Length: 88
Image 1 (cartoon, rainbow, N blue to C red):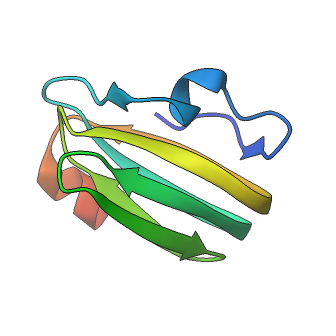
Image 2 (cartoon, one colour):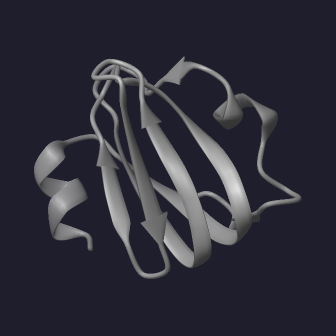
């Protein structure tokens, strides 16, 4: 299932603060335009994602995103890793 397409003005507050993906659920974050920063809290890493990039988020991974510029993005949710990688 895919989320709605979010922007810098419609991003849910919950994704901007520390949270984790659900057990058994993989998420693919797709950037349609602009950029945002994915913050991997488990590994203390920050990755700037730009237009046409995707990022796979593993189950139970603590993370958040930072809106740093105008952006359009979407999440897709999968129940196994292979599906999350084949889907894109």
